[in-house]
Image (cartoon, rainbow, N blue to C red; front, side, top):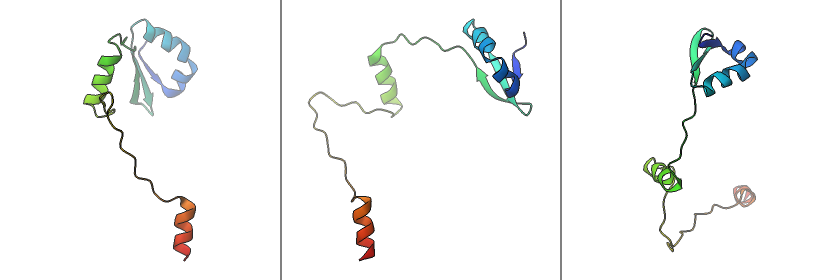
Length: 89
């Protein structure tokens, strides 16, 4: 079985392609003859919650807070109606 499919072919054979990828293969999907996406197996992530949170914190996606840390309020803007009425005056 080849490893490159057009988007049209990939949609028609998605179940078979996913089966192939689950067995360790890789599949390239092309759009107008140019590679656009690759299907590859998902690697198991058995590292645990703490390690995943640490990686997300390193990337700046989450911010870790210590227990008991005081949460700071978020600045609130006037509601849309109040802003609209203020502009009309």
